[in-house]
Image (cartoon, rainbow, N blue to C red; front, side, top):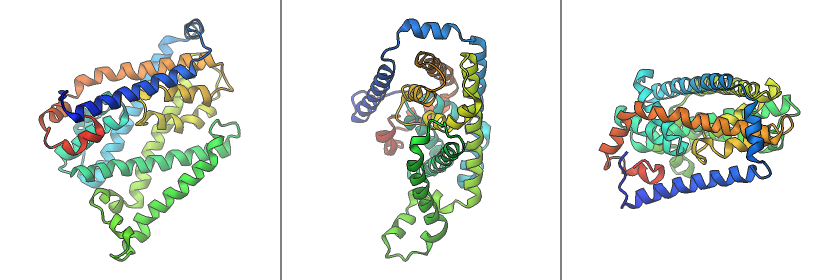
Length: 329
């Protein structure tokens, strides 16, 4: 990807990347206090490497294929039929760019909608925002259920925050599904309802919410099973139910726009989410292995994303509306 090093957008994008990796390194350093490299090496030496690789690869493929189906369904519902084969290079681009962070990676999806479906930039961004809304509501709801059903869940301190998020989310959903269209043109909220950028929210029906949430729920289940398999590969006796209970947070971390490839946030989830079931050095060693695998498995995907990147490099003028926020220019 060509970058104009003398431009303010390029400098801002570089600064965002430096800040993201700096924050991730600081988080890892903070969590690693009191843990020696000898302890990490000893914990890793007891792992069954082939099992870890197989489980991690299976989990990654489930996540990749699941998200390809998810976005194919999302785009087909609002912007015309989108086949999986058509979306594959863009998905590879998105996963490769997640090495920077998920916010940058979303630029590949925006570019796909703009160049292949002729969707305006702001409307395309609103479509991704709609999916983020569905994901957020689902993951928080699953977290609440896990807290209620599993008293030992590490997510328990966030119960009331989660309930607050669901209440606020239901208000937003009801606004677009029920009462927003009934407001008079003089009402300020009607102006928000009519915005072009959030057209997807207006057009969405309950069936769209259910279908997209169901696909994300399956991805979440696969992530929980893969996480349990990774624990088994490191010979950590963590119950399956606990891995499934924390899987919504694992999925949220995997899609976090605040960390490059989940570095830092992954360590936080492992250390604090399963502190009662394994030692800190064992959890830290596993979290490093997971982060390393997630980065390494994405690197080869760069070779499969030539079309999206060529489009980015060849359409500098067209993409000016998003480069400042995504840093893909």
